[in-house]
Image 1 (cartoon, rainbow, N blue to C red):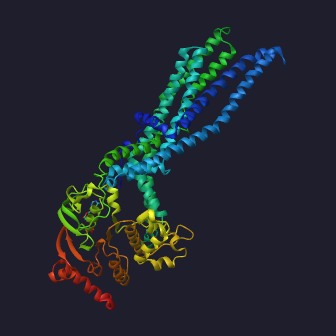
Image 2 (image 1 turned 90 degrees about the vertical axis):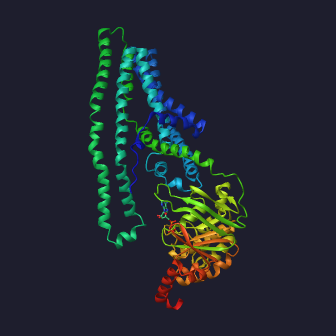
Length: 625
Ligand code: ADP
């Protein structure tokens, strides 16, 4: 189902702007102070330019009368040089402003990326990541840092850039007030700020209105990525979906853009008429007052003052415009801030319970792991998957869990690995509640490969080495894990051996078949064992291997993992039958428990499923039956 974000994600609240200001010091005080000072100076330079050109205008009549070489001509030249100096300084400052803007943006975004990573890895479990509200906050922050929108750093640099705009405006109004009249200065300032407010408010409303349409943007991006990506390339062609895909993409774009364009004039045209009239009226009234006074009392208003007041009044009014360096940045960049702030506030709650009592699980289990009356319901699910569930897993032995799809097999492993926490009951390791161990330390005890294991678009070494990342550079260890996982032949067949990139996106890279990937994943789990894991969990480890490869694999596997606590979830009875003990799970309950031979003799569900599969293999694989 499409994500339905709250409209508020686009709202730009003043409190949040203040929060940006508060977090600005992360860019470093020297950079921050430098950037603000530079903007301040950049805001004052136009004032200097206008004052000196006005002085120049005032001095021209006397200079013209006195002629070249006169003191009056020297004074006019002096004003001209001052104006030129202010102009040149503005040009010199522009690239410096740009440099500092980039620096502020990069530093702020760097810190924001760290915050995002800390927030997403803060919880030991994954339940939090599946929470729709958290997911939305994560996507908001992630997308804004990935360049889909303006980033939080750009919002921060944009906020600093406002300093220069408002400095010019206020300084100009002060010039009008000081030189001519404070009421006129206030009138011009009020007119300019009103129009500026309408500009800014228009942008806020326009973007807010995008809120409910966001769903369609999301959909149109989804279809675009499907159409242009490699993931769906096969299906789109095989099922003849090209035309349909184009149409859906087009429609999703229209769904988003049409109502948006239809509303634009309401946002931009209607509020602008009265505001523009108001600003124009105050500005013309102010200028008319100046002109009238100059006409009525020419002796009281000098040419210099007249030039100054008119230029300064126009410059004050210029506050009413669109700031290309700040407006979109602050409006959109706030989304990333908002996402990060939400994630941070949740993180504080998560971290407090992730540490346990600090007991060390190293070397455990020596006796057993027990699920004791465990009840677990997935967040938002109506029914528990496990209800008062008991299971004892003997240390150093292999256990197979069998059951139909949805019985709860993978859930048992997720709870064991503390990816979720049970609502009731407890899981113990040699009698100690596993919540007493720091979550990360306990998770390192477990080498688990899930059905949806990751296929990293990295080298073979990294794909295996990530089972125990601190040993990934130790070629002997990586090779041992590969050999035990039955992937030595695969490694030898690759052009660059361990260093081969497992992705076609790279020139020398290659992709693997499903079965080959599975061997790499098994090697990764065995790498975890090399790194100290003592509980090995394989969820459908042989689903992608052909029958012969599976038989081969398990022939050596149990031998190699002897002494480890091994849990295997599988539909394949040729896998399951080799385990020391088998439990059959049905709707979250263990209904049969024993060795393969005992369960076959029992004549229950296990025996029934075994018969079915054996019969199929007799039909399909006579040579292996
Ligand atoms: P099995 O491994 O035996 O096929 P699972 O443990 O994966 O079964 O799933 C047990 C039940 O829990 C299923 O009904 C499944 O739909 C549900 N389930 C699994 N993962 C989630 C999840 N993240 N959120 C909600 N329900 C889930």
